[in-house]
Image (cartoon, rainbow, N blue to C red):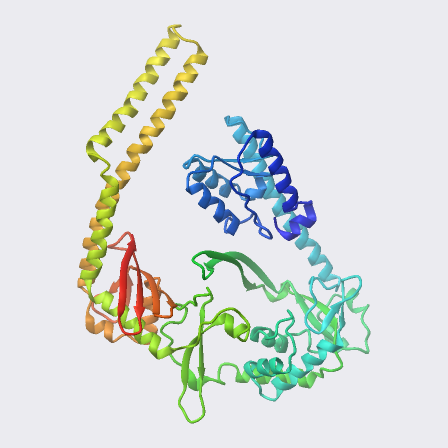
Length: 572
């Protein structure tokens, strides 16, 4: 249930649960678990509740997964089809209270039409909503549901009015920016003065500060200037003696998707990631907003120019190649950010620190301290380079994987077992033809024939499934043996001197190719990754091994501060 959908259609989680409980009681079902996805859209399967459902079904103890409506499962027909096939393989049926099908081709067609209608409804709602907002913006009325900092929405919620207490903070920000203060210094000053951020937090986001200084909402324009940007009927409603800022609508196209990340407790969590794509300039729509008398034009222009001039150069002397950028992740699940400082009387100090602690100024449950960059980079590169230079360790891990796969495949004699299942499938085909001949000769009715054929089809499907699974086991063993030989041959070509001569940026590329993820622990570092890279032709660049290896060998290791305590190849 997404929040806007609940308001529009009257859905609520309590109402859905009530209907499902009543249906389960009537049908005599035992409810194993009730799973909810609050505030999530059915347009995506990347939902924590859906992950939980799929885990439960994968365990094999669920016979029915029930939802109130088909569009509560997914609004994309392709996703519903994939879930249905996935659940069927594990003996689970995907059902909803508004199903119209009975398992027949006609019933499947009816349900497919319902799925397409749900997708069409979602697309039409989005289209109508966008069309209405564009019309509202062309009329010069504000569209944003939440006013920017320093403003409030009027009673009709179609125009902005200046909010003096917050606008005084905006004035302070512009004055500090005009004096040459960077965003870090502005952030620290606001935190020390106890001024809460727009979201009520104690620490301001640096991106918000940059947006405020560069925003056209706070830059006053004369009536003549604003008239050139808006429609004539909008300009006719403005006061010629006043100045106005500009709020741009339809400037960017936002693409939102769900991404998963570790939650710090061994599980996964989802968050929304928004990507902005700038539209052509002629598609932008200008909405006039009242300008504050606290912000003269000269101050706003000076602050914007000063911040642009200092951005990127205020810490240029501290620039370096961060080998573990984007690779280290805190135990709380957040990525580690890179930071540099220059203490008095000493040279620059480079370190990695939890992004959550930085954003919340330590007001969070994370206890991870800052990590000195040189110490971490030396430890991780020492481990990875030793791993790449030592094919024997990889060979032992691959041998164990092959033994495990072979033992799973050898449930009895694999050849005789495979032949038995193949014979069983062939016998079903023969019996099917015999039953059809008996019905044609009048020895059985159509109803009896249909029952016999259904039983044979079920036996044949099971035989084919077992036979295919056995073949898959044997093929995986053979593939692993080929991959082991290819991997060891590829790693034998690795040139140690080339590894030792890689720069920090090149080492970072190696880590990303290995899918490396490093998490600090009290003992040292936990390292996970996948071996899919080798030195190419003995040069100082790395190339993917897709041409010679079809699978990746994943590894997990625990590094102490002095040595590697454990290395385990976990799967391929």
